[in-house]
Length: 106
Image 1 (cartoon, rainbow, N blue to C red):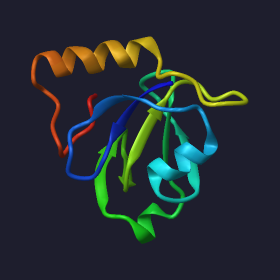
Image 2 (cartoon, one colour):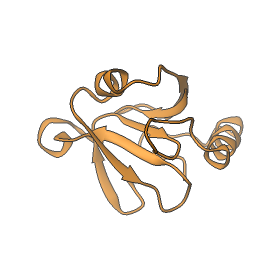
Image 3 (spheres, one colour):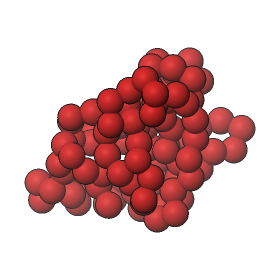
Image 4 (cartoon, rainbow, N blue to C red):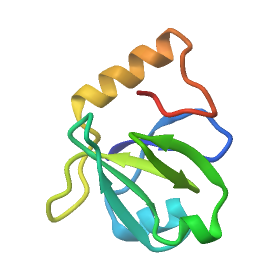
């Protein structure tokens, strides 16, 4: 499954990971919490207790996120690939060198 991963202090990057809850928990280092995006048709998967346990990462759409952020596509019964609009925007930002370690891609 194609996802966009933003770790603390690093620029976002595109990754291909297995579509399992266990993998998501490993990526965010704990139980997962899912927040829907208002800009794209997808979700942010983060550590449920991130505000108490993890280092501040960045602010996205007015919300402060802590620890590793995994952006996936729409969530139904399972996680899905990041939506095409988000991937297209990510690739454009990457191509022009606009990915920063202190901000999200939009």
